[in-house]
Length: 202
Image (cartoon, rainbow, N blue to C red; front, side, top):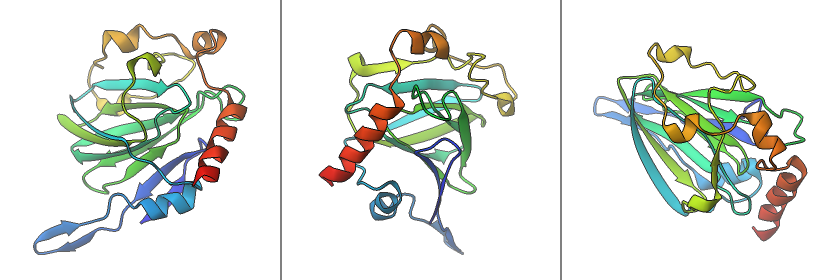
């Protein structure tokens, strides 16, 4: 398993080692110890989610209030998506920037996103099944979004090669600038302190 930090701090691409033979393939798509050694604290898992999307569906940009927030470990079990980590932490040196990982059943990669990062993906295959391991249960009052089509984010969905399909919840969400001005977004310094507290507890 190889783990590579993305250009957005606290987001990582995980590439598993695949063992192939005449029966098929075997891989470890999640290893708690390897991830803990990389991020500096254990990932406490509290919920697992699965979504199924058709080509062109965009889900996100989603994030949750911290604490606790929702750290996410995401992979694809069918099809392909382009998955983005978006830095929405006000004061971060990469605020507003994003990086992406192709999640598919060829390389079988995963992406880890720390609490306080925005998460969005676009489905590239006719159908795509995405599975998430997350660090907290879904708490509706703590969940928020940013419009995934916001020009300030500049996210590129052209690989979908289809008209994009979004929920009203996502298209009605504020843009990055409006979300920051309203105080909705996490602060970089507060998130650094929160990550350090997770390491202390561990």
